[in-house]
Length: 392
Image (cartoon, rainbow, N blue to C red; front, side):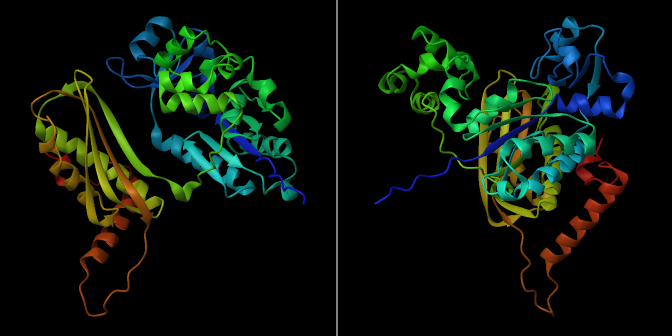
């Protein structure tokens, strides 16, 4: 009897190069060759994206804008234009989906593709990656770096090695050879705290990590220790989760100054709910669980959730549910630094059979929301707002 062997997966990880900054430079060619930094305000904001010219000054994502300004006073600092980036992202993901339906969006500018079943039509994974890179360049004028490997985490590492506009191939038989010399900090799950623990164990490279008994890693790091052990052995059984498996849709806002007034916080909740509801409707989704996230001035974090009887994509229902969660937090007692809102337990929207002789309120709300979406699409997000956002 011949034992069947499973064919290795063919995974491509695609990561746009300095995406926000690159879009700004493409839209304004005068910025080419200059240190461009996209992010929030200088008081409380952080860097969202930096051009490669700016990175030479030590600027990187998640860095406080105030620090970036000190490192590069001559830098060109621009606000985030999320709608524009989403528009370009949509064009890019349409290209990805030409080659496989198995596209897992990690973020607006990053995705995993499983092309195992696409090679008969489009060629080997390396050829597919080159075609995608070329089409993205032709369609958007932007560059994307790609990593090709049989495992998700290996493909992600590979895409990061030759930026910008890179392409790194790791064949199944070369996985261990590829991983051995790399710094252990390149693995998912190795942050500052974990890095210290591993350093105390004498671990600097993934090859070093491979030599540490799994029992020790679990004792020191718990479940993360087991995951890191598997990675070091070249094991990653995670499947590609395509778009229909999105777990939640959310939005959050970090405030320039801490907020204490409950009325202001309620306005912010409605503002977040409008954006989330529109994204739900664009994707044809509804959700049952509303989660409110509050980060206080001392960085303490609270989350509170409530599940609805029926799923919704209505901004008023989302906002009202979130506002009802406020008494379960310290809002109004402690200053708020960040507010977040998300909707989970998602499902596809479907049309119920409506009675011909009934005045169905859900149908009216759905029609109203479609009209609001169209108005905002044509005339801007602030063209029409709920009354609570118009109060002084």
